[in-house]
Every structure is written in C-alpha cells, then in structure tokens.
Length: 404
Image (tube, rainbow, N blue to C red):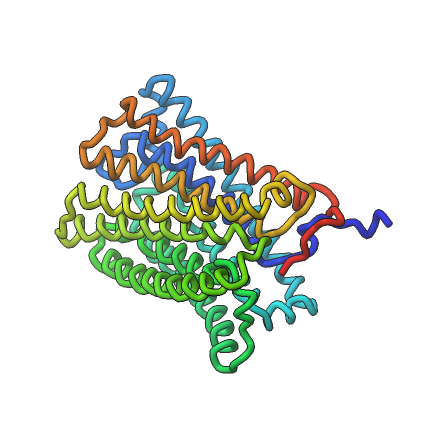
C-alpha cells in the first residue's frame, strides 16, 4: 500500500499558489532592510550600486544586514519562482480532472484567483531581484516600466476573466452560491489578488520621471485598487453574516486575517501614488499625514490579527494543522498576515515615525519597534519551512484534509 501514499500537495488545490506567494512576500521583507537602511540618494529605491557602495563603506552591522538581505532575497525569490512553476504545472494537470469541474461549480471557484495573485507577486519579486543584483539597471528603468505595465495588464485581464466567470455564474442564476458555506473570509481572495496587481501598477508612479508613464500608472492602479476595495467590502460583510450564524469554517480560519495583507499592499500603493503626485505633479502631502495613514491601516490590521488569533486558538487550528498531523492547503494563508505585518511595521517606522520626526532613525525606540517586524519575519520563515515539509516533503497522513 506504500505506493498509494502521496504528499498532501499531490491532492492539488489552487490554494497551493499561496506557497509561492509567501516566498515572494518574504523576499520583500528582506528588501525592507535595503530600502530603509541603505542610503540611496536621488532614487526612491536602492539599486545594485547603492548596495555595493554601502557594503564597501559601511560598518559591520550595515555589512551584516546587507549580506543577510541579499542572501534572503535570492533564496526566497528562487523558492518563489520554483513553487510558482510547480503550481502552474500542477494546475494544468488539475484542470483535466473531475475535481476541477467540481471546483468550478462551487464556492471554491474563487480559489483560482490565487493564480493571478501569485503571478503578480512574482513580477514584483523579480523587479526586486533586478534592482539588487543587476548592475546599471536604473539607467534603463524607464524602458522597463512600460513592460511592467503590460505584464500587470495581462495578469489583470486573467484576474477579471476568472472573477467574471465566478460572478457571472452565481449572479445570473439563483441558488448556486452556498451562503451557509461562506462562513470565512475565503471570498476575499479575489480582492487580495486585485490589490497585488494594483500595487504593481503603482510602481512606475513612484519611480518614473516620465509624466505619461506616471499618469498611466496612477490611473490604472487607482482603478484596480478601487475594484479591490469594493470587492473586499462586499465579501467581508456577506461572510461575517454567515459566520455569525454558522461559526467560522475551521479549515478556512486563516482567512480571517486576509485583511492584513490586503491593507499592506494597498497602503504601499497609496504611498507610491502620493510620491508620484508629489514628484511629478507637485501635489504635496505632509509627513504627519503619511504617518496617520499608516497608523490607521496598521490599527485595522492589528484588530483583524487579534480576531483571527482568537478564533484560530479557540478552534485549535495551530495544534491540528501547523504543529499537528493534519494538513490543509489553506494553512499557507497564515504566512501572508505575518509577512504583511513585517512590511507594514517597517513602513510605519521609517515613513511614519521617522518621517514625522517622532523618533530618531537607528535610535533605541527605532529598534524597539522594528524588532516587531524582524520577529514576525523570522516566524514566517519558520512557518514556510514547516509547511513545505508538511505538504511537499513527506507522505500524507490519514488525517490530511482534502482540498476544497
């Protein structure tokens, strides 16, 4: 019977795209070291030249941080791409099975949105890899922005086609969507995907000096970002009503914290747009206003982190699915909030508290708050390694949860 034993990942679910997403997000957490600790005068982001210069002239702590960041970005980017390619191959095979037809005719059809979400994350991660490892990239950056907009445009078309199929099916006919099974925030996944695409569209707004490119970036990111917000609001209110009646579906418990990465991604989009408006169109925002924006976003994130932690603890989710023998592809959704918190805290400290002059950069208070981001990052690295061993490294136990 040993030949019948398979890894949990062999019972495929589109939610496994979240494994690629998590690795890409961790690459971003390492890039935060370079973004906020390495000087990059005259540029909104650090490049290979800035990083190598800081390594040559910096002290031991700076050099150590750069080495950790560069190794971390490389390792997580490789894992991101490797897992994405595996998912694309597995999804292609999955589409030829009866399980795919069942998925397409259930609430879980929205899980297919994990694919454009992961694709958008990989494009963002590869852009970071280019900045960090490719000498002279900044000299041709203006030529790359149109290509990036085209890439995100294609991903946006894919995302809207998937959403259109899903909403067209359930809204054109009654009685198809199972409201009783909507007792989680799983239907927020399309909003998360649109948010990731929106933040990709907003990158040229913060980095380009071409007025047309910046303007196009602002308009496209605003459209996709607004669509994400509208979708999220509808999904969260309909799901909360079901959860009040039926409780939270245990396997989908991690989705209670999906608001956290959505707000981090949208928050970065807002910051990029503000920078583009300031640099290109002479629209100025006070640094204290930026701090308050980030403070409000972070406050909402903490509320949903507490809510999710409360429910997951009451349901014994960690005991069963993280540290125990059971497996569920939805467990990878736990990585996103931790990564998003790490990134948001870095922005809050550097663009918010330091930017507004409340604390000094690299002072005691600075490191005290930054420690939250670093601890969250380390915890998510450990979680990714743990989940990868569970799902990809050993045969499934009899307690494995089938993909939904």
